Length: 191
Image 1 (spheres, rainbow, N blue to C red):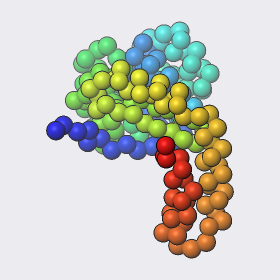
Image 2: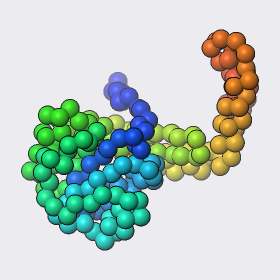
Image 3: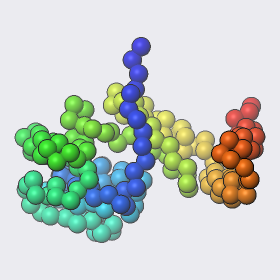
Image 4: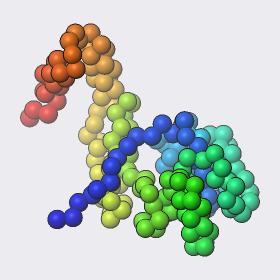
């Protein structure tokens, strides 16, 4: 049986430096997705042309933009790269340059040139759920995201805050704390 072997992690995007190469529709999608989840992300964009809506979003979020063709020097001091151009040779070059610098890279719509995928994300306050179909069906990920957005209550954040406050009052070692929190939260999954 096939399985998804990806390991989900949650990155502190406000502490990382991201380069997005491209300024068209796909770059807009990647930028919008990134900022929806991490509005304080540090992003630099480079492209010879930027759509007006890309410019609008970039200005609203203080994104650095260079209206230039890609050059490897744009990868200096970056932690990861997202490539969203319609030029295969540029996409491959950014991938090679990023790998040579040991950077994580995602080349849009090219799974073999991706170290990571941008999956579906549900955010309700401090609760965040990432959804991946291993690149097999973005539509399924989208529908699952819509489902979870509909069924997870908006006030879930209050539960998280309350449990965090309670956790700080529990005495004992790690196992004692886990046991106490498990007793309180077991009702969340009972039918």
